[in-house]
Length: 131
Length: 238
Ligand SMILES: [Zn+2]
Image 1 (spheres, protein in one colour):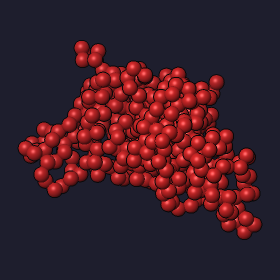
Image 2 (cartoon, chains in turn red, brown; image 1 turned 45 degrees about the vertical axis):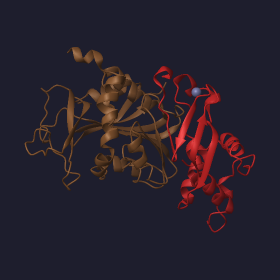
Image 3 (cartoon, helix red, strand yellow; image 1 turned 30 degrees about the vertical axis):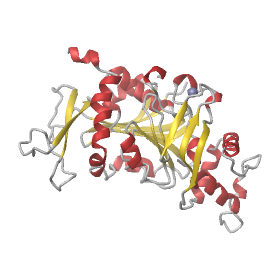
């Protein structure tokens, strides 16, 4: 599952869901893979304000990926004068859309429950005693 | 009906989840054409919109608009695996009543042919609450459920019929013609055919809107299309 997904996931337990500690989930023993994908500059540009930059910074650090800049790039940094995508946008595409967790675990920072990721698919079904 | 007492999570495990897990690939091969209202809802979303497809099945709606991002979820691992092939989106295995998403965060959500599989009135309202809760203020959710009123369909149910039904799914055994589905008692089933029964609650006119209100949503549009009731809901402003 691509890294962008982690921006939209938290712990499935009701008691965790609205706590700040549950987001983002922390990758553990994560096996990464690069999956090539067509770049959609308009999508990246429009989606950027929805990105929790602090969370993405935490994730890249935890996954041992190159550090993100302290602040999210502005819209002007994503396209050059002729409207072509800049390297900044290309890098975001590579990080968010092409970098994927193939397997591992996602750990809740609040309750410490671990969700398994297998073949790129995370499983959020809770054992019945945890629902 | 004494049987009603036993409905709930375990009942759905047996009469919905286990069935989908077993029929996943055959089911998927019969589900490829998006319905027009759903297609339009997704196509009208501005580029960069982020939303959920709750109970995404084989993910046929993930392919509609490549400029939005969808996190699909399904209770069936086998269906999620099929759905995950639709890039650039993502798919997780999750339960509609315990979704792994931040509340009040998404631009839109769709939940197509899912809520009717929950087996008590409370759980259906809870499911819709779960959908509506995921939306940011002004976000929109499109919900589709099977209608009781389908006199013109080959199933022929009408207002007088019971709303809680078991619907057969026939998986052809040896025959080559996969994708052809017929009633269990249609008279021409083969011995190698396997019939599965899924639980459905068939919605009555007006019932979906009621459930949306009970789930703190407001209905901004609703209608009937090909044996289904649908509604577009927004979170009620507080
Ligand atoms: Zn948790």
